[in-house]
Image 1: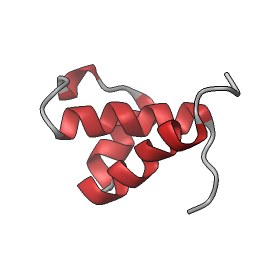
Image 2 (image 1 turned 90 degrees about the vertical axis):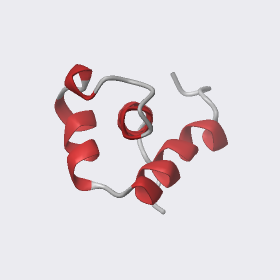
Image 3 (image 1 turned 120 degrees about the horizontal axis):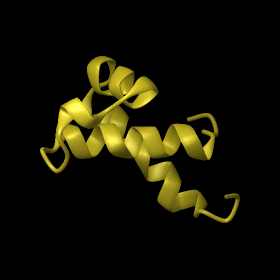
Length: 59
C-alpha cells in the first residue's frame, strides 16, 4: 500500500470507527464520509493501520 498522509489515515480511522458502530455515521464529514461510503471494512482497516505502523511522529 502506498504511504498515506496522516490526515488520510485519520479519516480512515474515523470511517472505520463508524463502520464498527463506535462512532455515529452522521458525524463523519468530507473524506472520512467518502471513505465510509466507498471502502470495504478490510480496506479501512488496512488504511487505518498505517497510523499505528507509522506512528504519529510526523504531526
